Image (cartoon, rainbow, N blue to C red):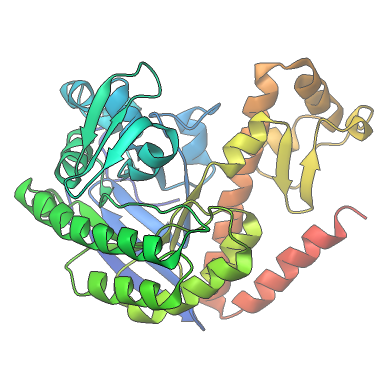
Length: 390
């Protein structure tokens, strides 16, 4: 587990500046540590998604017990409910959600593009109607940074435009260039609002779709700006894995070695292992929590679907060697029963299994990089998925 920098009341005991330290490499794979005012994040790291201030179907103490150092919150959802100003008045998102460790917030841009109604985008920002009640809002780079500041997140994201793929190259280029201009405005707002002085970090987001030249141009331009970290956005939106990995390979050599790299919205365990091999340090995805709510477990044996009748009479736990109680102490037959009857406990237990597995995957990656055997670790892990339980 990481060093805990919070007091017994959940508040900060010492606000330390944002920093990144590279501890080991194995080829392009990196092992490091991000320091924030609320703790140390071991990288490569998977960040459970807590969109609305909660990792769905889990207690925060259990999220922490899996080994998670950081969770993600979402600007779009939290600005709509309960409102950033309200969260700030209640002590900030760390206290509000009972998570006294590192929090990353995304900018809300992706959700505006995918969820909001009647949206209109221009140079200033994007105006949209809430998908909840139709109320009209405006989200600009400055307002996004203001909201993230009110939430008190340790790692914040610039507002960008995520162009859906496939898209014409001219549309991808337009979105990339707009995102660069918004990156500059986001940085200026972050500094004006005192983010660096609070020890917080702001990440720029590389865009450019599936066009290598545009990705490279975006990465070079962002690397020239004084961001604390850099993200790769606009991937994991339906393109083949080979395209995603190729775009990472274009971008990685152009980003500063001494800053963390974050691949947004990724992904499957296989996506993560392959992306770590290409120099990515941080990941987030709703997949492990969403899958758990739909009866699917990720394990070292591969995926297990508990809607399948083959589990109905199986007295074995998911994994008797696991330290996770949900994977070790409940029979597959019982988990099948919970899923088939729609009991909330089924979603809770399988989500716990999945978040724990993702954290184990990352710990294994960190250990393997430090030992100089990351390629072997990937091969052994994938072999376990292929072999299943024999």
